[in-house]
Image (cartoon, rainbow, N blue to C red; front, side, top):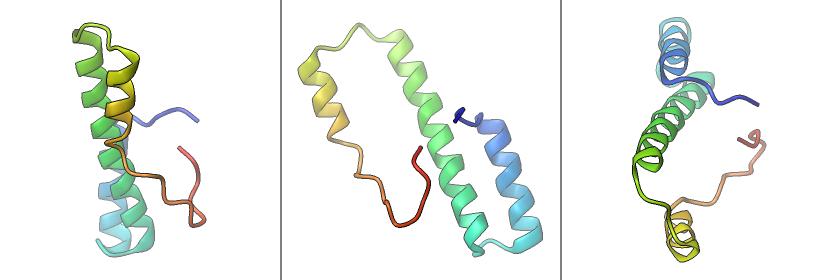
Length: 76
């Protein structure tokens, strides 16, 4: 599945807030997608400008990410 752009994720979130309210489950899911899109965009910018990481550095950074919540959600 393609990663949504920050702009499209923000638009989707705003539409869901307007139609379902800020606390609706679908709005909260869209908020998570928006935050993930913003984080992915930032990571892309950093990775594209930084020198190549060693395997140890990659593992250390990977450890900073929380484990996915697999309670019926779709895998990203």
